[in-house]
Image (cartoon, rainbow, N blue to C red; front, side, top):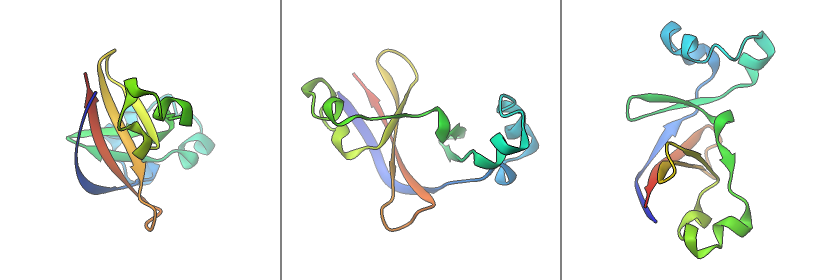
Length: 103
């Protein structure tokens, strides 16, 4: 498993930080409560909903098939072989570090 990251911190955004075009992409957030609870980030020209990321359980992170995942908090698959990883920045609550994985 290959993981690539530049370790840059990306700010976590609220619904109101998104453009009208970006908000339209997340039309499944159809109530004000869901919109207010949602959080997003931008990475390589794409806006991601952190609610769509799955938490990486400890038993997966220590599995040799997922070597390197123990440093990450969540993932979202693009395909069977690739996807995006996120790690919350410990000292700054409103930023994530983002990486990509592929095999």
